[in-house]
Amino acid sequence: MNLVSRNLAGRLSLVAVGMTKRARIMMVAVIAGVYVATCIGLTLSQRALIYHPCHESAAVREAKARAHQFEPWYNATGEQIGWNRRSKTQPTAGQMLILHGNTGCALDWAHFADALQTIAAYDVFLLEYPGYGGRRGSLSQDRIFHAATESLALLDREQKVYLVGESLGTGVAAFLAGSFPKTVSGVLLIAPYNNMTAVAQYHLRIFPAGWMLRDKFQSDQYLQSYSGPVGFLLGLYDPSHGPKKLWIEPGATHDAVHQPKLAWWTEALEFLNSAWSYRSSTLSVRYD
Image 1 (cartoon, rainbow, N blue to C red):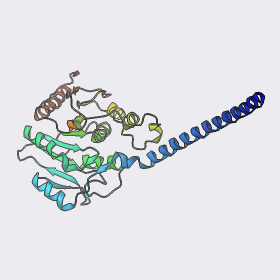
Image 2 (cartoon, rainbow, N blue to C red):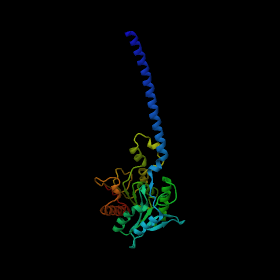
Image 3 (cartoon, rainbow, N blue to C red):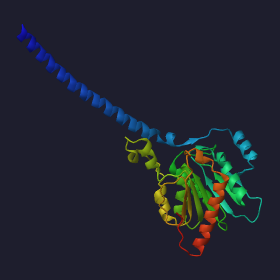
């Protein structure tokens, strides 16, 4: 009886081992399937994850513009591409092109204009990206860069042109500065990033973000072609070759930097203007 029991127990053990191997193979197959499906899902939906335009009606946008004394800004074909608020003081200190973040619409950055025009007589322009704020067009890096290039060309070349980018808009500002270095007099980057691939990889650590991502916003590469002054608020790495300065807001989150204090705007503008004068006199100045 003991011998029969031992034989039966041995056979059951072999069966259990076989089932365990099959279960492991099935588990690996399921995990692999879920991983691949997630990669595909993230790849297909990536732009919905990156871009979050507002969905306000035209009436709401127009009321908001009136409240902030902004006028519609049109391109050569009569399409509205954003908003502008000219300085009441002439002559102006220059033109500020504001390139906003990935959430909301251009008028949500009206407080940037308030701060800038409190400090000096700037003409301020808010670019609305295609797909944002009622503007026609699909959401993509290429469309945004095309719109930004068009907006820069519409500004007065006889006056200084400064770029202010926030979050996603820092990649747009870096692109313009690197593509048109002789046109841009200075750049302020608020809550910047090296490139979107690094951002995606940080949030999706187990996925091949570099292969999946289509809109890479490679700020670190764009700025290599720009030698003008660049100011960073909460930047950790700067590949540009010109005068530079880094501001760090202690204890502030990414979203909190969306509301820079007036004192920072004052200091940042002083840096851009002083760096410009140094560059004009061919002095080599580096800000640490």
